Length: 523
Image (cartoon, rainbow, N blue to C red; front, top):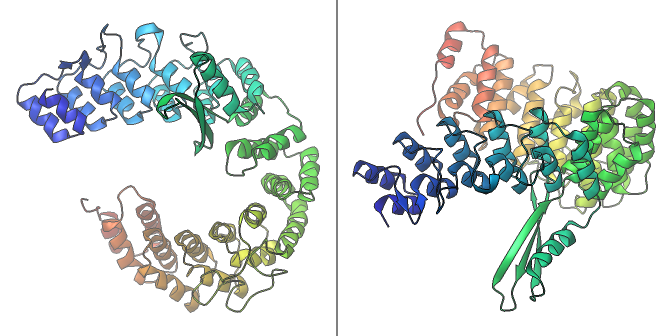
């Protein structure tokens, strides 16, 4: 093998550059494959860019018949950065390779949503059918890739009715069984052992089925995503179809995970209605007989913005019930405070050793805390503060998020709660609590010292929020902290962005100008 292809195999950009400078052509071929195709399939974006700069043709086919395109090879693997590089160098997004496949046809059918989005951004036809005759939106619906469907809808893809029928056809289907049956139909009667894995990715679950031969050697495999309910909800919304509340609730509850698309899309569709029917349905779910149904009710109520005053008492009652469930809240039998500044928190802000805080207590707590935060009424502060000692860090983070911009001046208990949360062992909790402290509409020595204490935090995002809070109060300690963040924080990170946003509070024009001209150090 040539030095060039060895460099590609090793992922060694310098070796590739040396080979090209030594005279090997960028269009070199080994075993029928072009160097560019080999690098594209291997997901070597930097090497692809070097080859393109050296004259490799992004449209040249590879393989025995010259029918395999670098763009399609990269799309098959979901190598979005390689796809981006090839398109920037002039590859046509809809160029066909052998058997009529395009990069979009591969990416949609294999569920590579980021690649789908890159292709669409570079002009790929969102309606061009694949070799099986299916338009991209229908193929994405069959695959169960919610992010691919979102991208296609954003770029005006057609065929919504057909895609909706396809998505609905798969709702409730045993995906693992369907994939396995397809594999067995292909491989006949040869004995195989099936191994099923469920991989959490792209807002859903991907079901992977592998067939193993009798000797344990791998046979073949296939996979499919499971976001069909979310896709149906998205398409119904786009078509103006009003799906019954209970049907949307069933989709969310069947999924059973508030972090997955099947749940979040159902909640978003319900919350967008803002009508009496949906309000009464959500209120009934808050009194449901399962944790998930009550969580769903809270999430929908929190999103019904125009019903805030009517939702608040329901959410407060649900919060009290959640707090009083033994072992579910992690903050005591009735949300009563433990010793220390915040219920369930020790002097350093770490969670006390007590039962609860698992999935059974986390989901309803997260839902009701987030909902109270969205309603944004200070009358809900007692219930929000009672969750600050929850054993689950995600719930404590949600409390900090909910309290941001909600704490009125002079509310000592809320400030004490945030002070304790700003010392939490979890960096995310400290980050949100520090942000909430910065937003408290008062300026006291206690607040300033609490913010200053976070300037030495190991998490730069926490430091940035503390510096912003001090800058808002014209505290001179903000200047040095902002200068350090602007110089040393990751150039495209959130900490530097927060520091830049804080400059609007620096009144001294000379200091502000110096900070604005502070450039990141090379890393």
